[in-house]
Amino acid sequence: MLTPVQSAEFDRLYLGHHAWLQRWFCKKLGCTFQAADLTQDTFVRLLLKQVEQHHFTTPHFYLLHIAKGLLVDHWRRQSLEKSYLDALLLQEPSQTSSLEVQAILLETLLEVDAMLDSLPLKVRKAFLFAQIDGLTYREIAELLTVSERMVKKYMASAMMHCLQYKRSMEML
Image 1 (cartoon, helix red, strand yellow):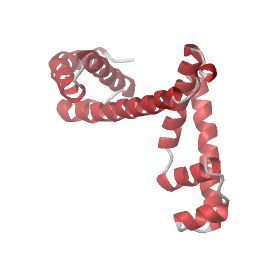
Image 2 (cartoon, one colour):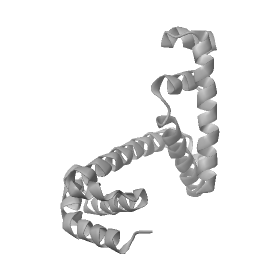
Image 3 (cartoon, helix red, strand yellow):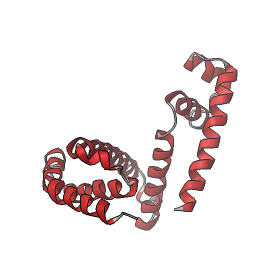
Image 4 (cartoon, rainbow, N blue to C red):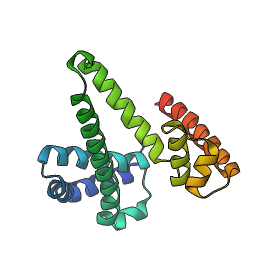
């Protein structure tokens, strides 16, 4: 909960930077509706972080830092959605799921992508080589130029991360 002083600071920050941030998003996206959504998301993220007062001394930089992260997430989601929709177009019409099932699958795909993206690069690669490509730990070790024992550690780390991520999502 914000104190009255923090609330007044936030109000001043919002009123002073909202239009500028929305114009910035609009230039990047070319869509006023998406720009408005991401602008709001930026300020919501700021509220949720319960930012320390010193960040308000350089609001442009701090808001831009949050906004860039949201923009990357937006583009990643768009790319993933496009790939998913392209894959659906390749299916036979009789095999196509209902719109509701498609939406659930896309949301699940986005969650898996977010979970994998938060893994360190070599851990993510090892996990995907094992789960998607079906490679053995020895084959993965050769590809990543690490020991087989390190691949086992990567896999244990990835599995633990998956469990923790799932638990954190269930709490929301």
